[in-house]
Length: 66
Image 1 (cartoon, rainbow, N blue to C red):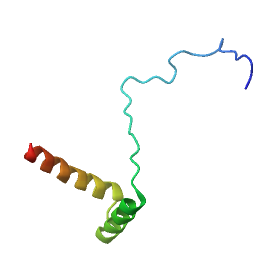
Image 2: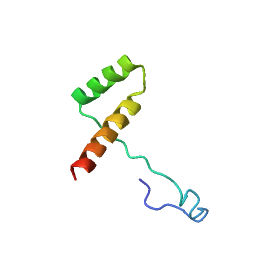
Image 3: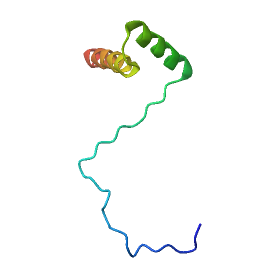
Image 4: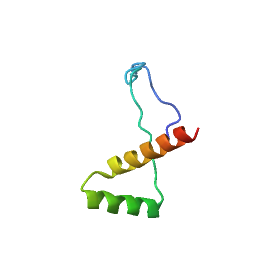
């Protein structure tokens, strides 16, 4: 690492986008990941779709339970 860096030609805010959306990664345990991959393959859909469908179902159940 350098002792000093020259930022004199830097542009403040060059990569700032106030409307940017951040998608946080979700890490599944290996057994859950394997199950979801197999289920998605059997249904010929993307793993993300299967996981989202399962989560939506659980959200509805949790909301109904109050």
